[in-house]
Structures are given as C-alpha cells and as structure tokens.
Length: 155
Image (tube, rainbow, N blue to C red; front, side, top):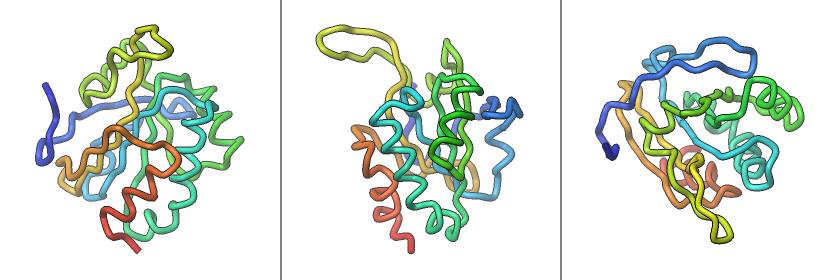
C-alpha cells in the first residue's frame, strides 16, 4: 500500500536509544517529522541528522517532534546522538523493518550495480491528528530539514 497525503500515519511502537518504548500515539496533538535513514555515522545520514539539529530551534518553536528511524540498534543510536549532540529521538526498527515497510521506506536499493534490501531515505510530516501532511522522497540528505522548514513556511 502506498501512503499518500491525508492518510492516517501507520501506528507503531519502537525502542529509542535508551531502550524505552516510544509510540506514535505518544505524540498525538503534536506535529511530527519522521525521517527514515539508512545507517548511523555514515556521511549522508550524519549530514541529514545534523541538518535537523541546525533547524531544531525553529522546529521546536513550531511545536514539532522529530523522530529519526533506522535499523541500527539502541547502542549505535546512543553513540550517534552523543557524538553529534542530537536533540531529538532516534528509534530502532530492526529487520524485517516493519515500521519502515508500513511507511514505504524499506525496499530494494541499488548501489554500484549491486541490489540489496535497505532503508529508503524518506521523510513524513504528520499533523496533530496523526494524518500525513507531507511526504518527501528523493531527498538530498544535507538539506532535508532546510527544505521542510522552507516548505512549511516555519520561522
């Protein structure tokens, strides 16, 4: 099933970098940015996380919650958060990546002629009622948060 704007965001519960359970329902009444990324501490994923960090004050001021999701484990997430002083929550979606699949963000990828299954870099903006407001695909990691902030006209 392909998600579209106006659809109810798929419900989920995942563990964060401290092994605490975090559910989408925990944030009802708030706007949420969920971004799926392939791997902690890789160049593109680091640029993307740091771009969200650079935009953190404007996102926070506009009452957004940011959730980064990859299949990395809690320990990897914790090291990534500490290394780059990330102010938002990272969640682990272990193989078979059920949450990423429900958000159409896990599938066949190609790199240097090799095909493999992996996390697809997508970002979703969820409104306060839990409905999908925006979907971003084909993302330039280094400016993803800049793009969201400009697109939503946040200040």
